[in-house]
Image (tube, rainbow, N blue to C red):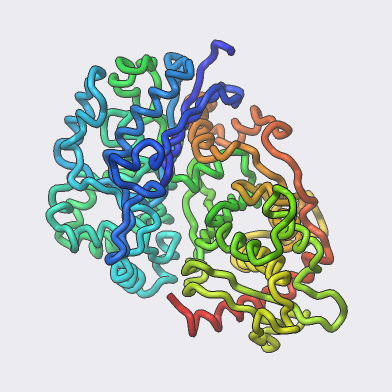
Length: 576
């Protein structure tokens, strides 16, 4: 192992706290994790990391579990021989939107941490509320309705804050807290996001909210770079705005730099260097786009239990059906984001209706069926195109109830030709037709919502507007059939690539952010410039598909209007 500086990145997700340590040349030194169910299920009564109150639609996590996990993950790093004295910078990520409510005792408790005691022992009175709402919480429909209406509609809210109102967004959660638990709100001195909460533990003081993560709150005016007065009034009442501003704090616009030195607690207890710097922590989705030098018009498709489409763009074109957030490390750039509840789970349901494969790969039959089926099921001239929506869970994009719907339309994509069909009809063809249709459906939704953000590429004259590259992450990225369909539908002028970071994209993005904060050549050196100089593409990514194919891209392009019309019709009869 070299003797140079190291950088530490964290990811506080729903089910785990991960830590990863890297060198200046981006090599991973060691990593550790705490699994909330495996390590703390009995103590904190969590399942898949959370507790639920189904009657209210609440999904939440014990803050004490997060606090205890920090000591545990650092202990595990030390047990693996991590040279903590060489760590010069720390950053990381937290699940977006989740909020932590600090008491009036928090600042003093954080400032006076004693390395002879655990964090949990010393922070028992630091919180005005013992739980943090999780991103899966859906208790705030009333508050969402107020947020959408307050500025004149969902489009206006999205124009200002980057998103329409959503159950999980922090502004609606704070409003519900003030209404449902006023005693908690009144005792709260500061409010952190999960990311700034984690930064606060290492800083030994309440850390500011990150410039990217703040745009997942429905409270931040993206264009003016400030808290939006009328939305603060909605959340806290007109008289309560000054108090809410104090609770939220100021937001630095630079995603790099340093908040200050690490708390002496970690120097005493774990051997960190006293000059180790704490950089801004960001949200998990913004951290994902920091896991590689993502250039404008590059897109990441995360294929996990849920599915996420992320793209780096300089064009700000908000809409209620998706999210725009500030880029965490590139001022003037934005992260375009689509989040789908129905990702891997929906694909697995379709897979399990097919004949069980003989070998060990549970996806073998599914993959074979997908690749043997022509695009949209059009085998010959005159065949109808097949379109479907597969939502075992109520969906966010579009906002439709749980259910499955299948339609056919003419191959030219005329919306007027849409016709509902049953799964076992000759017009559809049963479970085999669903295999390709579900992957196409997920990809067509991404193409429909991203097409206004892509444009022709100078390096590829003559090609239609499309992403430059598609990077796939998550469990589904290992599936060649999914990669092929995504390339057919979305394109990818330079191809489709699998990003292999061992499931640690968010923590790795945090480590890279810490490195950039300490080693950038002044404020003018961008994150992507620094990372690109040290990035070894051959080690980190693998090309898994050619991407753009003229015929297939054109076939799918024709049916995008019909796909949009199918969604519109279903929103009228099956809206959540």
